[in-house]
Image (cartoon, rainbow, N blue to C red; front, side):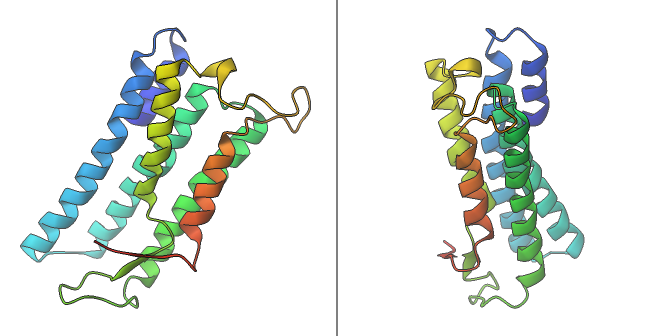
Length: 182
């Protein structure tokens, strides 16, 4: 729903912010359902490789693709913006794939859960979604994105705010960051 709402905003009247608010508001639902499906699986003592893969795919869409689509809708639309936002999505994909491959070898607690996350968990991208919601509330969208446009009129033009996505992508794939699980 978030990705589709971002697309609907791109096709509509830029002064009508309803669709972009919807895009940003749907993202936390991904966290709720991600949390609940894990709780229910542990409560039922049921898990499967299919469930693990579907969980990762849902995370990639909810916390990788949806924030990138919202950034595009808000005005990060240069060619270099596209490349940098794609890098962010691919970092999310890499992080989730590595998690699925290494989950069996990471240290576990008594309940069978991994003790820590390697790299920042992909749901932490909701922090960027919150920041984008703040921009919308201030009217800092389209031509008014924070920090403006760099190298305008060249093939290297981009919005510096997309560097937040690049930084976050790098933190997600970091092998040296170990964040204890709650």
